[in-house]
Length: 155
Image (cartoon, rainbow, N blue to C red):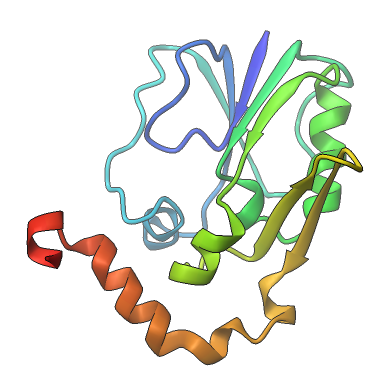
């Protein structure tokens, strides 16, 4: 069994079960999904909603866990990782934006910088609130505008 956490509008085809945050509002859901309005088609596969705390699954219930672009949104990455390891059997995939991407665009729904240290085999995180990145809001706003433009418009 494969669990996917936070599938957004594009669930992975190999996932059997999905875990999605129960959003407070449609506006929050759209904002967290990068402005996407489309809901996912789960093709009848089971989806569970949770409040952002303990995952509603048993220990070692899944053979593999997929978590793509979720951990940077989490209030407590340490606890989140503990839950991933608890419900998974130590196998999975975690994807997150590079720190350089965060410095350029500083998406306000991303709460953390995430970095994997290959030498220490450790995933590090730092709350963006503990940095001075907010002081560069005007620069980030300009760079974010480049994302909204197509290549031709940008040039």
